[in-house]
Length: 458
Ligand SMILES: *Cc1c(COP(=O)(O)O)cnc(C)c1O
Image 1: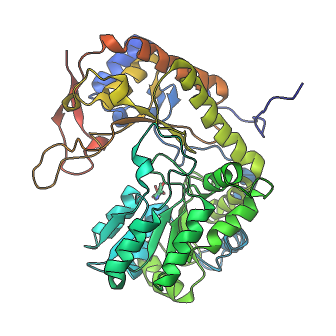
Image 2: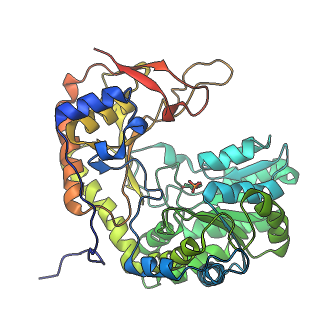
Image 3: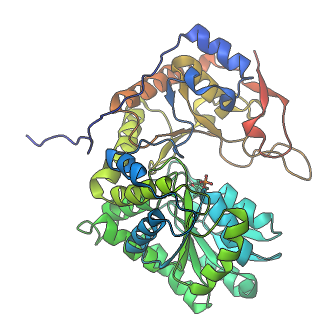
């Protein structure tokens, strides 16, 4: 018989997990004002809050940590990192930063001026924040298919070339660059095809514009190209990454995702003028150019992490685990955003708890129920996160109301995936008994989801 798929690693260090009782969890979530961000991590059994900075490093990365060079200037760990990035992306100029949003801050300080228009595919919230805080505008040109959670198309993260063309035709002089997020995080970790990256490049060239890739999950994107796009099945992940980046002028990176480290980021580009411009902002915001907010040891571990993650076995193990969980949910009939993306499942809470009115926040209610059921912590990506309209102060109910379950890299086993799926099934089976949601009793004006205080109704 054909041998089954298995993880590309074995485990050599473990951290015990503590299971709690339902009574304890009911008490803890109440003390946390029904906000899962306010839970302590040891009150959580399986943590699916985020896949950012939560992965496990390999023995080779830990060994690299020991070899890290903590020199302020000219650290050999910086050059190890720079050479790795250049080898994988083709970009010659590299500036390290302490995380992804810092890379945006440094590069955009040079490139984004007031009134600028930055088209892209569902800008990540910090990316959008760094554009809007400079009184510029982020224009979302994602394909319409991304809005339909049940539609099965292979590259739901794509840029719509017509929408992009329209922005450029009307406002080219205001556009400092185009930004493409790979994978498209906001659309659910959905990939962008090589074909689409090529089209974006061609449009950019026609208008003489440059292209940045927001690359937090670029390896996941490469894996989807390999498995879904014609002509790439025999290419290595590194070859695919090289081709992807050949269509960009530069990148911002959150190393906490596909860098396989717990903290870090960087900017990389092929253009000296971008490097020279960004340099001026790196020094005051992040630190000298050969460490930019990172330790030598962390740069060394990142260099190894980038190399490891761009090997097929590593990225395949990760994506297959996310797909394993998705297949379980299919078996139980639980609706999620399809097809599953690279890093998380997004449960369609409006469809699960359809008798709970929007005003009582179905996705947050589902997150609370799942936590009480099994100590699994997810994250509401829905009406609470959407904040209020800045002018009318009304809740924004226009978007989707989702419960996101992120899968940390190399942390949990498929047995844990089984527990997550079973817990969801238990909640799903008693969904008709869950008739009331939650009410906000205290909130901040912006980014309320981190600190909001809630009360359970009913
Ligand atoms: C996480 C992320 C960022 C921001 O990176 P941080 O390391 O969290 O600051 C930017 N863009 C995308 C697509 C991300 O996923």
